Image (cartoon, rainbow, N blue to C red; front, side, top):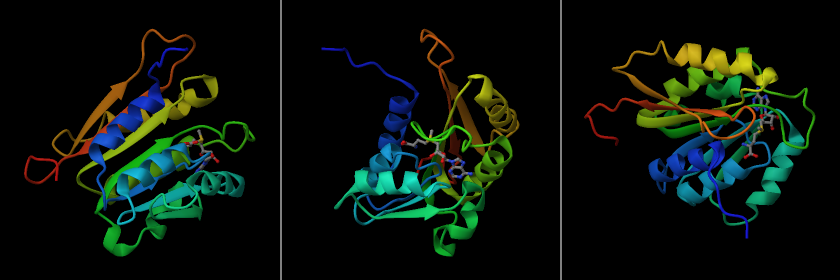
Length: 196
Ligand SMILES: C[S@@+](CC[C@H](N)C(=O)[O-])C[C@H]1O[C@@H](n2cnc3c(N)ncnc32)[C@H](O)[C@@H]1O
């Protein structure tokens, strides 16, 4: 049997599992084939809500099938994540526990329909505002040639964030071949020094 090994996505899932609770409101900014959406739906349960964004109907359709019945409350939106704020109910703004991005293109889909630095950055700015104190943003960035500029934009923005408001972490497996993805995790400071 092949041994289980960790990768960028499994690491992000661990972070989400340890931060997201039943009843939380969360956002999957890049639904794709729905693996991350499914994980979030399991974490928030029926009393929570997952907002999911993708620009491709085919992605939302695949995700809907994966979610099936009984995997919590998921609102799949055919919309770019750069319009995120317009789709989040006013009383959920500032109350989002976690936002997750897995950048790039739909595995098995059209490579041209990939995330782009300008819209990704607009979405990340909105995501940080939408988070609750103590909330978590995760971004999986690909460091292959097509994804590198986007990854550099994300890092360039995060390194400038005020450290009394956000704690920004960069993770990368250093013994994986090729150009292993980079994970950014951003924790929004909580008012009372304890993650709410
Ligand atoms: C790497 S895939 C996501 C994988 C997914 N999270 C999963 O669990 O299978 C990236 C997705 O981002 C989507 N995408 C590209 N630009 C977007 C945008 N501006 N807003 C939302 N989604 C976008 C693509 O259509 C693609 O499905």
